[in-house]
Length: 163
Image (tube, rainbow, N blue to C red; front, top):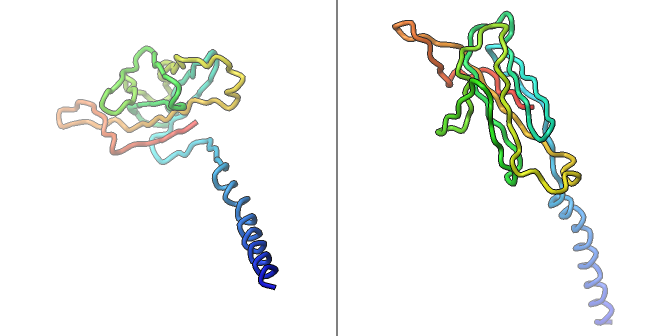
């Protein structure tokens, strides 16, 4: 009788433990993917991105009815990938890692193309079917000091476009 009760107790414990394995495995194997962008406020801009030849091509356009703005951008990929930036009129700020467009972007104008190239291309690209480079760009309206000189105040950020 004792042996039977012990066997039933062990069987009950095994069933309880087995029922909790599936949710635990789901917790450790689940992942999420995000896409899209969110326009915060002023000034209206748009980003065009293309990815080919292991390079992301980025051009930011100011709206016709917008206002003069300063623009900056930064790209992200998996930590195993090295990104190299190039493009006329773009300069790296080593303090924050953003690339700044050197010219004020007037309404209706485009930035020059910012190229973000992957340096260490995988040997077997077929394994990287879902590879992506995420570009974050921000803009801020042009501010003027007492002497009439333009400057950027990044605490007044406009868009945080994510693609």
